[in-house]
Length: 227
Length: 227
DNA sequence: TGGTATTTGTCCGTATGTATG
DNA sequence: TCATACATACGGACAAATACC
Image (cartoon, rainbow over all chains, first blue to last red; front, top):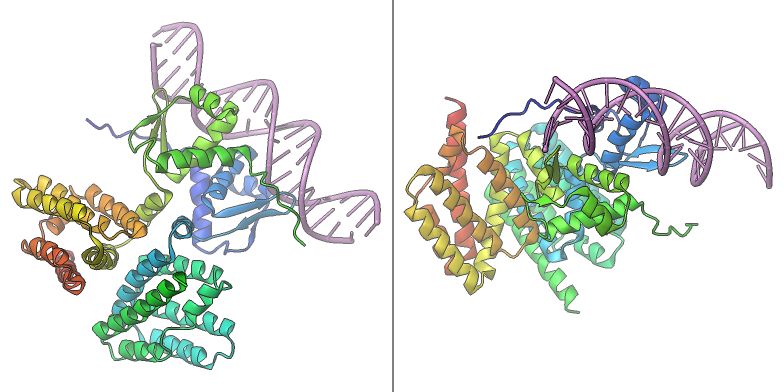
């Protein structure tokens, strides 16, 4: 039978968890340099090796990045985000699009049901920015912002986390021609229709628009591949 | 300008990647005890400290588990799985159900489009086992197996990985009453209808059944909460 | 351009507690 | 109970890379 071991969590693990909490709570936002080892040693009350091992664990996980002579920097907010992105890297464009569809459709549905007035206003602003975008690059940025605003209105933290990682992956490959084409949009009117459906609180309609839109992207990706 | 970054990735990282590959390739399946340190030292040609650090990194990530005096065991197959499960633990049941819906609906759609004959046969076997299950526990097992067979037929590796983690989380909480109720199924006929839709290659129908089924679960979870 | 301070990387040894046989 | 091996934590010393004046 299973015995429950009253395992005393190791010091390293405790420190590692504290660091993780500091990152996730945005006390140390992504991109910032965390305090030097000497300082953290005093703050946590542990020796250098113990602290270093905790940091090392996060470096391997992808949350932190150390630069000799410079410092240690926050690279990502969650482990899930990093591992999800790594997984996406080893996948085909078609697979990624299908996952994007799954997440985005569900989120659009929920957003239509749950969005608050503030979120609705934010979505409208993003839509406007999208329409007024002059060049392809700024359009891609505005496009991602709009989609993100919609996902956020779903009030589902997991979907938000997954989509954020996915969007970052797409953004990273935005310089690629394929990525560009995929964002210059299947149907320019889809955005407006989607937002309208959400505003009218019609989940089924919103979901259908997302499906149609991404289905179009899938076809484009397909023809791109066979070219 | 960029200086040539020679691939002088640290020795630890190289070993860690090799170990990860061995786990993901199922050379070391989940649950097995990996060879003792001395053996691995020779196999990889590195010092003990280097090897130990690589192992520690994976222990922290959740891929491995060390037991003093016993050995090191494989705990999970992918980092994505572990981090996804951790994320699910800190979420509400409703959120989890919504993510499950997103994944399962997409997978059911794709499975209806893409399933091979072998996969169809396997799904049928799982369905039969589901119907013949005597007690609640064996039904839950067969249920998960059936769903997994369907997801596998989607031919989308990411969806498969995500759902596998999700299913494990549900399975872990199967002893919980809530978890039990959620698996005793909303509608006993839903399984047959879903499989039939997939066999007939009707993606829209399959997706609709999944949606209806999980919608029912959401209502049950809701009433359970307000009790 | 160069020298100095800062910061992380690596190695060493030691002490203490714990699991195993 | 004792002996051995291992895990853990600490402290120090020096090297290497970077930042700053």
